[in-house]
Length: 463
Image (cartoon, rainbow, N blue to C red; front, side, top):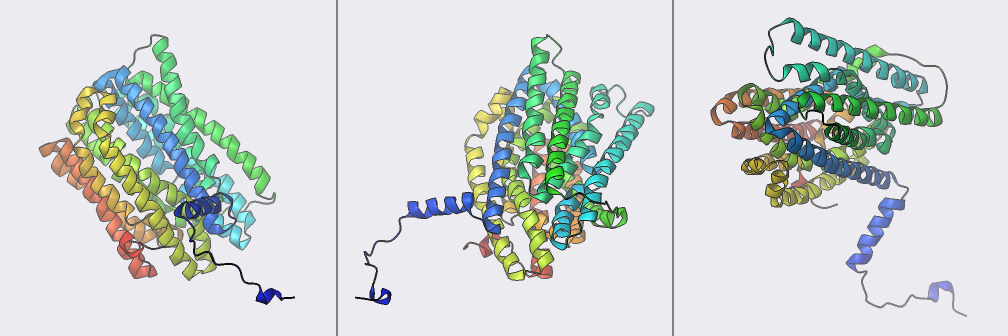
């Protein structure tokens, strides 16, 4: 009787088909228990939420542009951008600090500090948000800024969104730091635009004027509804997953981490929104609306960068805390590939459909289509470096990352101020693309020199 060693499997010479390989890879992503599979699932979930969000945002913005007209829509674009900027700085960078500190506290068993950060960080973001809103209101009311401007009254109304926007942003980082992707992303990126669209629909049916003030009130309802739902969902998860116990507050240490991150985050906001703010000072609201439609259409490419970065941040922090250098290098290569190739595909698809997409806003908006090619260059350059800023922030290089983004933001503002008065919306597109590409390049240099990590897609073509 032959032994097991004598039994040889028959060799058929057949190789597994590519389809079998793809199926096996998908099965591993969906059911695998490794950290890599979990990160891929998180990235897939984050990307899925952002895709749904992009659809809702697109529908809502198209409906707003059609109902309101180019002039009133351009006003709304400006005041919402103001909320993004003010709300985005009111949490003092604690949203990004959550992503770094929560995994580290869990790895080291510091649950007292974790509980303190979870509670204190949320309250602090609200307090600062209210303060920023009050200062903004006082400035607009007591000075000649905006006097007689069509932007003034809608801007005063929408300031109430600032503190609740700050809380939502903070809890976004909290959820990502804990790996709760649905809790972090669904309320701000799906529920908020959905409520905005429904509220504006009711206002339209009720015969209310479709102007920027009505849109501002609808935005207030949407912001507060999303924040309340998100807070309830976060609290349920906290009660279930974080062990009860004493809280330790170390605001000094937290702010030491968060303030450089705030500089980075604020600079990122400037990179994304300085063009709209500068355009509003030089061009008509109608032209601002036209540019906004083209720029935000092309910016859909960045959802992939955000999704992968959101999913990878927790893993970056954990690997860095454990000192797992080789695993970190491997995972960085994965993140670069997960970012670039889908971004390239989405960019090509958006450019192919650009004119019909802009026509949905208004037939006149199609004139902004060529701008999308200029913006695509900068966004793809950034995607080619992967989620570099997430990596640098999670492994202790947040100060250099903040410096890079601050310099790029200053460059963006300077180029906008130089080019917009001369060549209008083309100047804004060129300024944004050049600034985004500059930030990506400098982050790649820092990662190579400080961490020994190659971020370029050309250095990570093979997995």
